[in-house]
Image (cartoon, rainbow, N blue to C red; front, side, top):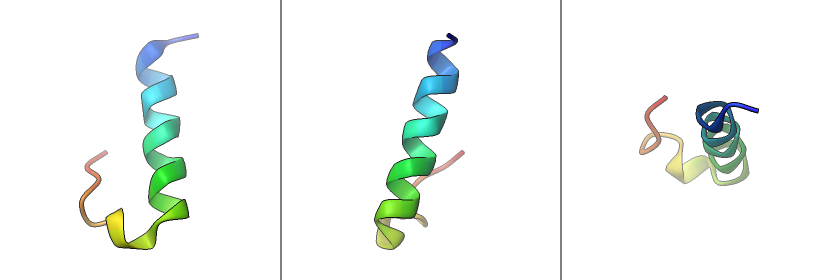
Length: 27
């Protein structure tokens, strides 16, 4: 499993869990 893929999934998960951070997370 690619490490970058894992970090990408974590970013998406956190962005979906906390809408306020969505503007702070850069994909």
